[in-house]
Length: 190
Image (cartoon, rainbow, N blue to C red; front, side, top):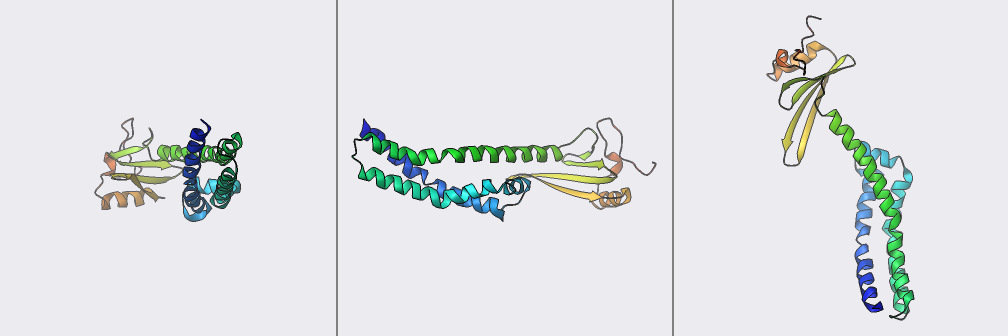
């Protein structure tokens, strides 16, 4: 029975080395190659970035050290099983950091989904196109679906005249843009 568990643990320990390329890509991404608000917040926690660098070089040393120590011990001893558990126990902190990183990413995904969704005060012009009036300026949102998800274009305008000229250039009748109450977007008369 010891040899069966030992074989299973040997396979799992060798497979666990696949964490090294994942750690390398994650380290490069969170150290500065990836953009976005989530990556910036993760970068602001230096320990989250440093933990990936440790898994790049330290984890393989732990694995190979455990494999060497396991080879030196008798195959049917309990010590060889315990030595093989050490690298797997070293993966536990990574689970916590992945949980924290997923929490940060989820927060920004929800904020993004909320920002690019139609609100009650927004003026819908056509499917995927709407205008938002906030803090004295206008934002024109245009969404397009593609094979890799949806993409959004947001244009900002300080004055109603700029928005009106943009709408005319893009063949959008600005008086047809209405909010959920049925009120048209017309700032000329105000």
